[in-house]
Image 1 (cartoon, rainbow, N blue to C red):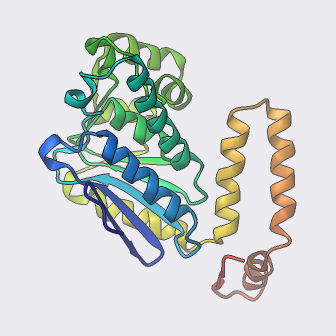
Image 2 (image 1 turned 30 degrees about the vertical axis):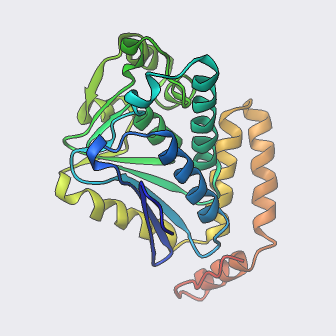
Amino acid sequence: MDYKNILCTVENSIATITIHRPQALNALNAETVQELNDVVKKISADTTVKVVIITGDGEKSFVAGADIKEMSTKNAVEGRAFGQIGQDTFTLIENMPQPVIAAVNGFCLGGGCELACACDIRYAAETAKFGQPEVGLGITPGFGGTQRLPRVIGRGAAKELLYTGGIIDAQEALRLGLVNKVLPQGELMSAVQGLAKKIAKNAPVAVQLCKAAVNRGINCDVVTGIAYEAEVFGLCFATVDQKEGMSAFIEKRKADFQGK
């Protein structure tokens, strides 16, 4: 997959998407968001991909935000359109069948924090910085930050970050539950790849249905959520992987999942 601002590789059923605009600290301009939208759609349809990793190029920045220089000249109609494509793209990431892990290797601000929140799991380097500084620019978050951040860290903590435009370090992000784990920069990618491999060895359909159940349930009442869980639980028993997984357990051998 050839793009101007994104690198994408697939190895051992794991796709790695790297935001590649080092000259702009990997800031998201319209072209980059469109490319991300395109690659996510292609990976979502690729049944050979079991896990996705998203990271930024280099060791300084994951995504430093949306491209302020590009945004500065937009009018209201153009601004809304830019926000909409960003929201659409991040919703695709949130709802793509495969689990998505964010490897946050540096600045994770504005659109970068919104991108990370659209991922299922977030690992961060010790040097990472997080925040939604949009109010200091006279705007609100536009790629889903006012909605996903409160769902990840809670309403009070999210409002404090959103209203102040403050920036927090990786350890504070860990305390708030914004990231799952903090690691030295040099160990980040190996840890994320190790996690991806652990996920990839399990039954793909079951993992994907877990993701769907969590995403569906978090936005509805618990009774509706557990009803949906019952449906996907039952659906698992129609899969080849369920027969293989349980047979392997009974026969005390390693399961060979086919994703069917």
